[in-house]
Amino acid sequence: MSHSVGGQAVVEGVMMRTPSAWAVAVRRPDGRITTVVEDQRSVALRSRVLRWPVVRGVVALGESLVIGMKALSLAARLSSSDHEGEGEGEGEELGRKEIIVALVVAVVFSIAFFKVVPSVVANFLPIDDTVTFVVVEGLIRVGLFIGYLLFLTLLPDLRRVFEFHAAEHMAINALEAGEPRTAAAAAAHSRIHLRCGTAFLLWVMVIAIIVFAFVGRPSLPWLIASRIVLVPVIAGIAYEVIRLAGRYGHNPIVHAVLWPGLLLQRLTTRPADQEHLEVAVAALDAVLEREAINRQRSADAPVDVMA
Image 1 (cartoon, rainbow, N blue to C red):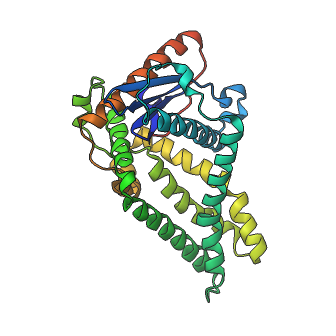
Image 2: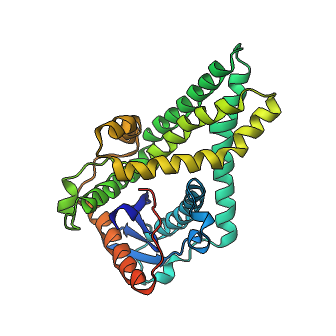
């Protein structure tokens, strides 16, 4: 079970997710913690093909984006209100149309900025060798990504989000260590996690270099097209890397390979205190309780999710 728990930071709170449910816990302005739980049946359970290696990564990423968008919207409303009515009905924040539009904008921006721009820039550099071109393109991509993260760290409003991000990791680390689900137990654990989405994105950048090496350096239109079309393949492979990391991360060799992704998490997490950890544990308690109930109702195999 522990390796099937993931999550993300949201506005003034944390979202935790298991294979069949997700929960958002938010610290309201008056100090109360409000928790909302929703069921989520993965589409991967509908077909064995969707659970194939690489393919399951694309499915998991898509579901994570949708749930993450819902959780962010819900948390934004809860964190700005002291009114009563802390029921599951508060989860209906965004309609399907709004979620689709928001996701399309986010995906288009990400692909344009982190995939297309590096390719176009590298294409106009005086590089003749294909291998050198792909490596330089990859370095530009990684540089943009790290620069983007550094820019986010300069925004004061995101500091608390990074603190809740750390609290999410610490609570999951404590769970995976078999310790009680308490803020005190979580406080003793690292704010770094092997299955973090930040590490996943870095692996997307690295794996892209390998995949694009097989494509070579076609004309600019085909170059741009290949970078867009291969995004799902690269994401799927990166998912498998992160999945393996969750299982074999204690191996010294594996840990050394994953070290750059772990180091990068220092940018997207900040030390969490009791206030943040209480929220993370509340979300974890709620989703695990719902997961236990759902498992009694179904014998479907679990699907891993990212931390």
